[in-house]
Length: 171
Image (tube, rainbow, N blue to C red):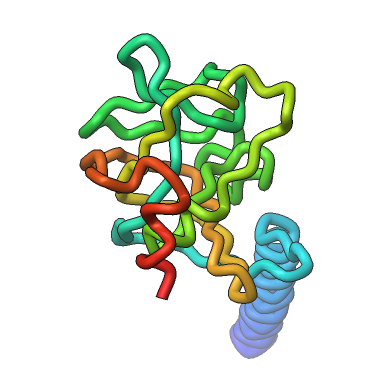
């Protein structure tokens, strides 16, 4: 009887090990599938998780003494030293429409500015803003544009208020 009980115990342990291995493989497969779902593939863009902040340049406008975004009809206000986060995509990859766009070169940021003719900010003074950026981001190698979920303005760049004065910074 002792041998039979020992054999049953061994069979039970072996069965448990096999089932545990199946569950672990299924979990690993599920994690890989979820990761594939959460990291978007957008043609022409590479995903980059910026754990450490990088320096980018964005162009804003000065409206009644406030720094505002050119691209969301003055809803986003920048403040030097304060982090601003995208409205969507917290703790995951944000959708592209919720990102802030910037360049690593000052001249590229200034020459990339294009507003619709009916924009309220068409005649507003433009301001080049140096920002720190971090988070789950996108980079387009062909144009050098970054799409980032979090920015913190660190300083206003003097003497670069128009594309003409920034043209020498492109190189």
